[in-house]
Length: 68
Image (cartoon, rainbow, N blue to C red; front, top):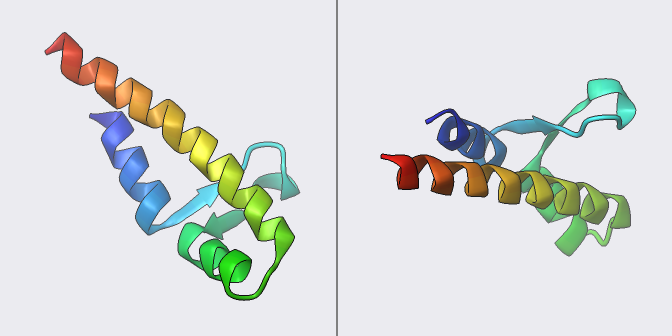
């Protein structure tokens, strides 16, 4: 169930990219706006990092549901 709460946090709140900017928190919605509407390429890099973390969490959530 922990994976589901982390997924919700990623999608609705702030997230931290490990090893980047010493733990600075980013907001996915803001980064999506910056990338698609303002053309900011750095936001695209953060979005990809967030999506990789989301994929890991989705796999963990899937495994949790298969165990029950």
